[in-house]
Length: 182
Image (cartoon, rainbow, N blue to C red; front, top):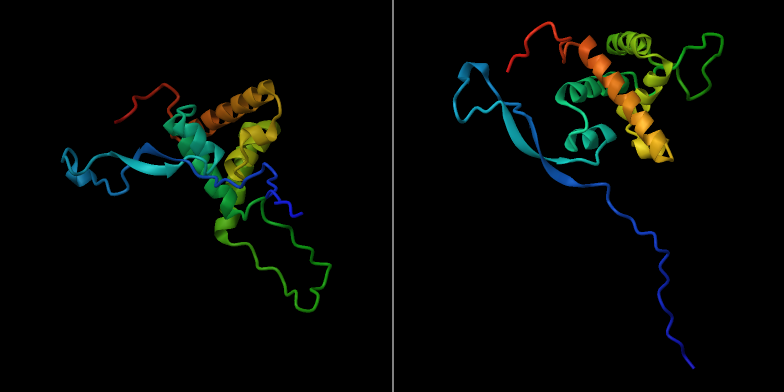
């Protein structure tokens, strides 16, 4: 007797982390010299993977505004300039092992990024900076950091407040004392 074997499935199936949607973004080819021309719009429609990061997902769902998105983008670029979690320290007492070589010195860009991130930490405080580092810097989703709905809501509030503070600090959002320009 020969029995046909069923192909076992584990129920877990790999799914790509892609969800493309239309979003409105700043036109990278916009020219102030040709302002008002129909072929020179300030904003354009573009296709974007909204699951690329938690920040992009929040922006696509209109849960953060443009100033908060700009602040998150700047924070991410500073974080990446530092090499992720930050530059490692030098240990001058240790000799390099064979084949290991010595560490490359810090670049001017890494030093400036480190100083700016230190300033961010002073402005945000330890807890908000930690959340900002994990979500905006490392790309964690809020759902990965919190289990319950209440924890997710609290983390999202910390993140949004931190983004508001950094947006005001970097001049992406005014403090209400000047008019916004179009």
